[in-house]
Image (cartoon, rainbow, N blue to C red; front, side, top):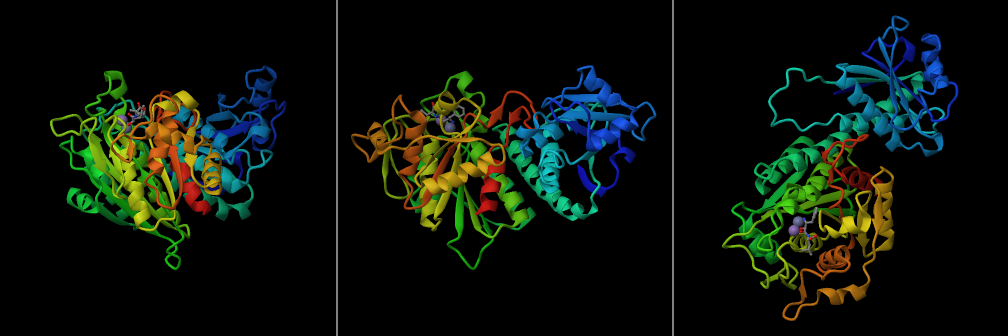
Length: 498
Ligand code: BES
Ligand code: MN
Ligand code: ZN
C-alpha cells in the first residue's frame, strides 16, 4: 500500500477515482466537493436534490464522470453529522471507500483530507485517520486460500491538499497512521491464525520479528527458567499441553535517563483454550484460538511504539501457553503457588487466564514496572455485562485508570470501568489455599480482574477485559470480520500520551 500526500487541485487528479465527501444535511456541496460538483455540471447537487445522496455516515455513492473529469469515477462519501465528526469516522469512511473501489477493480484513488475544513479536524489528524482506516479496512486474512484469479487489489491512495504549508505535517501524520494501521493488522494476523500455527513458540517468533524490525530487545523464558522463578500458576496451566510454554518479554527503552518512567503491557497469551479438564462445549471452544489476543495486542503495539519512539520505557510481557486436557493436565482442586508466593486452589481449570496473568503481573512488579496494563480475553461474563460495544476496565489507581480509559476513547476503542470493591474478595476465598481461581456466579468479570490484582505489588494497575471485543462477526467501517486488533490503537495512544 502506497499513501502519498501532494499539493494540488482535487478536480485535476488522474488516479482510478476521486473521493470527496458530504456532511449529512448539506444542501449544496462546498469546498472540494463543490469543485468536483462544478466539474461534473452539478451531478452531485442533483443527486442531493433527488434525495439519493444524504451524507449519512457509511453512505458511499459512485458517480461516473463520462469524460467531464480526468478520472472516470468519483466517490461521494457521507461523513454523517458535522457535530459528530471524529477521526474514527474518517477512518471508517476511508476504509469503506477503499473496499468499495477494490471490489470494482479500481486500484488507486485521490482523496481530500475528510473533515479538515468545515469538520474542524486538523489536516494531519485527518490524514492519519485516512491512512489507518485504509490499511485496516483493506485487511484480509487469505494466506490459506488458493489464489483467486479474479482477485483485485487497491494499493495506492493520494491525499490532495490545496495548502502547501500543511504537507510536511500531513506526511508525518500519514507515517504515524501507517505504523498504527500495520500494528493493528499484525495483531489481526496473529488472532486469525489457527491454533496449530499460532503456538506459544510462534508467538515468540512473531515477537522476535517485531524486535528485529524496530530494534527492541527480546527475552524468551523457557520452562526451566519459569520454574526457577517460581511461576507455578503459569506452569500449572501449561502442564496439560505438548506445546512448550514461552514467557515473552519485549523491551523498548525510550527514556534511558529515567528508568522509573516505565510501563508494563501484559497480554494473555493462551494460544488455545480448550478449558482444560473443565472442558468447554464444542460451541464455546470454537473461537478459542483467539484467546491469545491480549498477548498479540501488546506485541503488536510494541511494533508501532518502536517506530514512533515515545520518551518512555515500555516492557511487553506475554505468558504464552495452551490450556489443554491430558493425563498431565492440572486437576480441579490442585493447589499451585505463583511467583509472589501466594497459593491458588484451582476451582476451575477453564479460569486459566488469571493464572498465567498472576505470574506475569508478579513478574512485571518484580522488575520494577510501576505502571501495568494487562489485556486479556478473560471472561465470557464481560459480554453479559457490557455486550460487544466496549472494553471492560478495572483498576486500583483512579488517575491512571482514567488515563487508560481516555486513551481508548481518543481512538474510538471505547472503555467502561467496573468496580473492584473489597467486598468481592470473599467470593474467591479458599478453604485450603490463599485464594481460589474463581469467584462463583455473580460478578464474574470483577472477581476475575481482582484475582489478577492479587498478584500486583504496589504498581498502578489496570486490567482490560477484551473477551467480547477481540473478534468481530461482521465487516463494518475499519473493522473486518475476524480478529479485530483491539486494543492495539488504544495501547499505542496510551504510551504516546505518557
Ligand atoms: N478465554 C475464556 C474467556 C472467553 C470466553 C473469551 C468467551 C472469549 C469468549 C476464559 O479463559 C474462560 O474460560 N473464562 C471462564 C471463567 C470461569 C470458568 C470462571 C468463563 O468466562 O466462563
Ligand atoms: Mn478458559
Ligand atoms: Zn481463556
